[in-house]
Length: 213
Image (cartoon, rainbow, N blue to C red; front, side, top):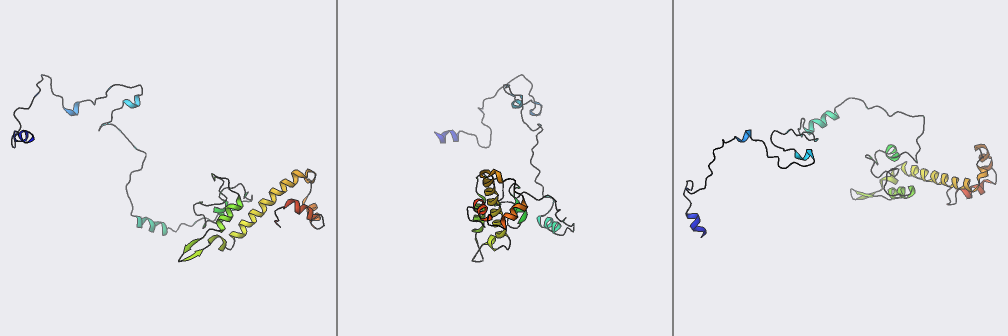
């Protein structure tokens, strides 16, 4: 049956029995026809019909490569504009409230801020000494050898221990003042005097129950 229909087709010609439609209306060119908008909705923005004449734009930049990558790198390297030295401020930073302090102090360790133990935007509440311990145990294989970059640094370990030690002392000091509100009036001179006497050992045991000395 399929071959009968196939053989009935004219060769290199138009079939003579095609159905046609005759009309007295004038044929309108496609260029002059308005697009079919269909039924209107309650949202005018959805009734817009997009065709070749509709003005559209996008927020993405045009991907035109104006300069070769190698030329762009050379121009950046060859620039002679000096880099300004960082300015100094008279007010010290609060190292327990300023975010990404380690990134500012050790930019080679945290060039983009990732892994910074002083990041205040962490999703999980991890204790400071746990963050530091994780970095001090971090190691990677370079040229077949395990390299501990953080403990090998001449200052990072001391900086980390100093931050942990002083934060714990501040916490214990707050506990001591809550338990002994009458000692809140102590001045630095009085503390120095007590440190030189035998009464200093009692205060140290209260302030530093964890054995930090």
